[in-house]
Structures are given as structure tokens and as C-alpha cells.
Length: 258
Ligand SMILES: NC(=O)c1ccc[n+]([C@@H]2O[C@H](COP(=O)([O-])OP(=O)(O)OC[C@H]3O[C@@H](n4cnc5c(N)ncnc54)[C@H](OP(=O)(O)O)[C@@H]3O)[C@@H](O)[C@H]2O)c1
Image (tube, rainbow, N blue to C red; front, side, top):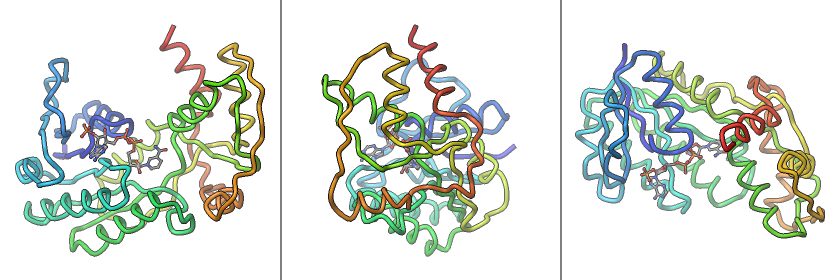
């Protein structure tokens, strides 16, 4: 049994990591900016922290074997600072194994959030801590968020020529748990979803499944970021190791909301 801290344990990935760790019998701590909700599993040691000041982080890091760092801020600078704050607390806590989740293509796509992730990777590598970094493709949840967001209007703009390879978040969580409870491994092979599809095709699948009718308008977005996406720099076809497809994920989500 390991003692594992999950930063951002309330987030989409963090929740899946926490659930998987509890199921596997590990001792689980999480950090969140929010106070512990009443309905939290009593087996979870919840630490409310302020990532801006670092307050609460030392107590959260003390005595842990490893940290799975999933907390993230959308703002590039703040995201790097957040990772630096977690790293500094981990160093003070006598250097647990730090496992960082990153994104396929952060080194090739000039998107500000990705640039921040790349900087944060460097902070982890240069921390002096034992470390492991896993890059994955987009989670199904994010793709669903994008296509459902685009479907709010009767005319649905979809980026043309962009393919995605979404992966199931519980499979990412399982990989992270294996890494966090194993030896530090440095940069490990990417993890991608089982299938690659045009965003437009996944949007059609979503509409069919929701019984919605929309007029899909393919848009060729300009700029270097979209060019790199069209070139597939965010894909990992040689690591299509996830097993759950977007269609299966959607069916499961619809089942939950009925
Ligand atoms: N989503 C994807 O498709 C994808 C793909 C590959 C990698 N990743 C990486 O996986 C990690 C987790 O992603 P996720 O989709 O699970 O994210 P998420 O649902 O947004 O969760 C991130 C958590 O970070 C915490 N947080 C800390 N400081 C924050 C701030 N300043 N602003 C907003 N939230 C803050 C929040 O928890 P509290 O509010 O409780 O503090 C939040 O629940 C990220 O590092 C992301 O880059 C994501």
C-alpha cells in the first residue's frame, strides 16, 4: 500500500485517480482549493490548499510516497507557478515521486496553455525530485464538452480537417496509478485513445445520439495553432492503447443522465 497525494483531486482526471487509488487499497490524500464536501468518502484525506501562497501544501505533502499532480490553471503563467509551488512543497517533504500529467504535442503546438504545460514539464524534470511524466491525448469528456458547446446554436461551426484521438479518463487514471505506485520512470510512452476521428464526425455522432438536428458548417480556422492541429501534432497513433471508444463513452454518459 502506498500513500499517494492527488493534486486537483476534485477535477475530471483527479477524481478518477482518487477513485482508482481507493479501490486498489492505497492511502489517498487530495488537495483542492475548496473545503471538503460533506459527502466525501471517509477514506479520503482532503486537504484544502491555496496554491497561490502554498498554504496547506506542506501538510498535504508530508509523509506521502508519491504525488500525482493533476491540478491545473487555464492561465499559462499561473499554471507554471502552480506546478512550481507543488514541486517546492514536495522537495520540502523529502522528495516523494512526482508524477505529472501532460498532453501529446505540447512541444509542437504553439497554444499558450500547451506552452505552459511544456514549461511545467521542465519544472518537474529540473526539480531534483524522482519524476515521471505521462503525455496523453484529449479526454472523451473534453471532446464532448467541445461538441456539445458548439451545438448550442442551430448552425454548428466545426473545425475542418482536424482529427482527434480521445481517450477514456479512467484509463488515463489507471496508467497514472501504475506509474505512481511504481519506480520513477522519467518520460514514459504516450497514451492515446483507440480511434482517430474528424471532429465533424464526432459532432455528427453526438447529434445523432442526442436526437438533435444542426446545420454543420466546416470552418478552416487560420493560424499556426490550427495548422499544427490539422497536421495531427496532438495525436499518438503509435500509442492507440486506450480501449474505450468515443461512441462507447457517449452511450455510457447518456445512460447516466437518463
Ligand atoms: N482534459 C483533457 O483532455 C486532458 C488531456 C491530457 C492531459 N490533461 C491534463 O490533465 C490534468 C487534469 O485535467 P482535467 O481535465 O481533469 O482538469 P479539471 O477538470 O479542470 O481539473 C483540474 C483541477 O485543478 C484545480 N485547480 C487548481 N488551481 C486551479 C486554478 N487556478 N484554476 C482552475 N482550477 C484549478 C481544480 O480543483 P479545485 O477547484 O478543487 O482546486 C480543478 O478541479 C491537467 O494537467 C491537464 O492539462 C487533460
